[in-house]
Image (cartoon, rainbow, N blue to C red):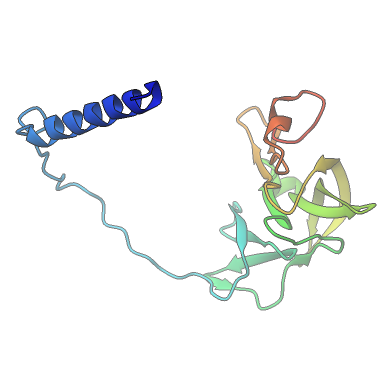
Length: 194
């Protein structure tokens, strides 16, 4: 019997013995714990329907709910009803695969400054990239676009970008690795970073 067959046979035998030992255990060391009677009751309630690949949901101080749809639409739910028309549509969106309109955040002082931050994929000379831009809510739309950062590597998959303000008031941006896992370990690229 050659060495590989011998090792394989020994490994198989060891596996069978361990499985038998595990099955023979009486369970005394692992008692069944009854479920808690204090489990909170949850109820599913549909707030909006017929949306297309919702990525981010944020809650405004005035009770409105803002959400992003991958094809580039920002939608608003107000008083329990979704507005019929999109609140805003990104004009130069690249909504393919897992990209499109992704992250959204409201400035911590949104009530005063009305700043909304959006992260979305776009095309640049045939390459897909991600841009984070700041807008101002003006009436029933977003205006005053200002690019915060752009040219973040993107791809059809793994472009996922999230936005969130930390307790320090700073905007934190997470980026996907653009299907190149090793990029997350490199300091000379924005792919796969926070």
